[in-house]
Amino acid sequence: MSSFIEKSKMLETLVVSQGSIAHDLKLLEAELIKTLSSTKKGYGVVISGDSGSGKTTLLNKFIEKSEQYVASNKLDVSIVYMETPSNPVGKDLFEAMIEAAGSPGSDTDALSRLKERKQQLEIMKLIHSKNIRVWIFDEFQQITEKWREKKVRQTADFLKSLTNNLPILLVFAGTDKVKTLLENEQFNSRSSLIEKVQMHVDNAENYNLYLDYLTTLQAHLNIGGVDWDTPEIALPIFYDSRGDMRRISDILQTTLTYLDGTGAKKLTKKSFSAAWKQRHNPKLNQSLPFKGNTFEQPIQKIIDALDINYDVNKV
Image (cartoon, rainbow, N blue to C red; front, side, top):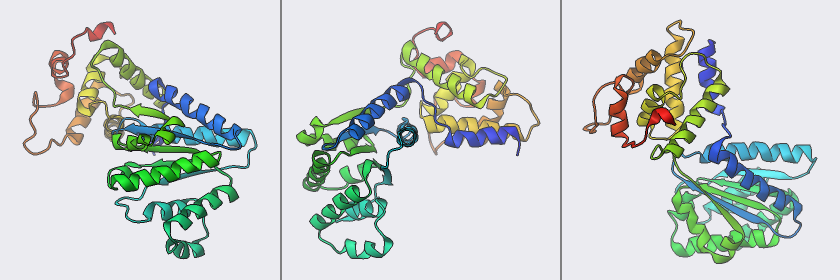
């Protein structure tokens, strides 16, 4: 496997802890330590944000840090991660929680026939018996978007009861709709909110944060050649990705895959330009400020398209 393909694969699992991610991670770590130091009560954290805003990156890094903390302190505790069921109905959430907590497979069918309240009691028993101290719910908007207000409120009441009676940290990640949980005043009083947004270049400060992100990626991957944070590279990447971290990774992966077949030793602007032709697939009838390869456009044209009103060369 070539070095460029290896670097491309690294992007799939690379977690960059910098900027707002580093700040958010510190908040999560503080809630973790508070919870593990408690014997009676727990806490909650709600992480909201659109796709590509860094929620998954933050969760992966937090799970890694939590496991390291537990191991280094020789704590006999469990961490549960689960993806919230899509299109949930009835007792789907509680059945998924029982399964995620590691209930014996032979019991799952029987437990699914239990009434909701008995399922909730079973969840509490599993938390006790397995000493579950961190429970992470990903894509929790599946609940808050698709259930009626009354059922969401009842579910929030149960989750609140967990933090009221057990030393457990509950982390909920999802779109902006996941914040509905915080409408429960008692749950809100014991919870923190982290709001993730896609990167922006609307002012010089945000542009600088974006450049820091690219520089950090480049340092991790250790690829020689062009500097990714020069406007000639950074602005076309941003224009094509609009600050979506997943799309940024896709742009870089496509470029590295292209390089693998060229025999090149370094990354150049021509590499990005050539890879753009492989990646670019505009939607039918999509209107664009300009046509053609983004990496071949005059920088001023991209600056105008992004409505940038500061000197990018002085950032």
